Image 1 (cartoon, rainbow, N blue to C red):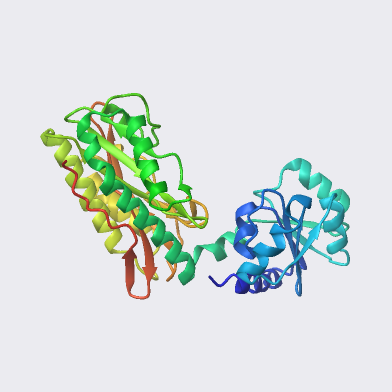
Image 2 (cartoon, rainbow, N blue to C red; image 1 turned 30 degrees about the vertical axis):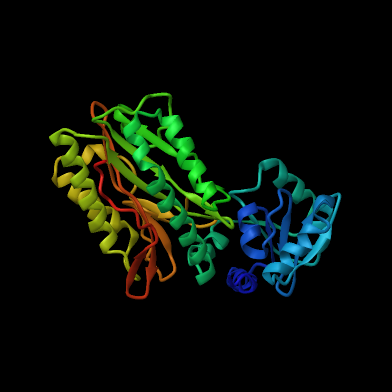
Length: 356
């Protein structure tokens, strides 16, 4: 991964905004910029230097992590991080801070310590993170491969009438056995009527023959997430269940096929939504069509009806339309794809076949 170049790109952004310095407090953004994974730290970025301020727990670990990724930043161990930050930015006339991450209390403490005006900023680093380099894409793809393999290893268990919680545990365990550091988020296993809840949590409900089962899950590899949804039909289903499966699968494929550089993100949502609406299920599709994936499971760019973002090569995003009927259940199909120079490449490979 090109970690060393990330600070340079951030400095270019700061210069365009006429900002002398930036205090980075989001743990995810700190990891992105310098490789530090600890629970306590602030990264102060200046035009010609960067300093990670942290505490004594990371005296040895912090320099080692920065050196491992080639980040050109110093480490300062401080008992009073606010005083250390104030000293580092002394002489600056404007200092940016992450307004979506800093609490009111911490802002007040910063304002008391730092002489220069504090300028709220949003999206400066997140926008950089949206375009992945080859190393990042390789990690997301490795996570997707683990998730694919875990589903293949466990899906037959759905025929044995497990509870949602039990199947979720088996799927999570399979991902860890295959090399995942952790699951990306709480795995969704939603059967029968529970499937009508887009973010249902696994329950003690037994998965029965004739159920639709929504499986939404992902693996974590070296800090990077994957995300995939498949909907399985256990045994024989009704004609309406099959209609829902065919419809959502077709909508997802149509939306995925228009992904490419220069495409406005909302057009993906519109493509999926129009197909579902024309079939009479428009009111049953009640969420956006996708989101970016990377160091966070949900990040920029959004794929929704209001997203004006123009896709770029290196964007990694999901395409995941769904239909949800309380009396029947739900169907969602999701792939994680990377935007390429000539279109897209799917990082998730599990078949869309629903019947078991």
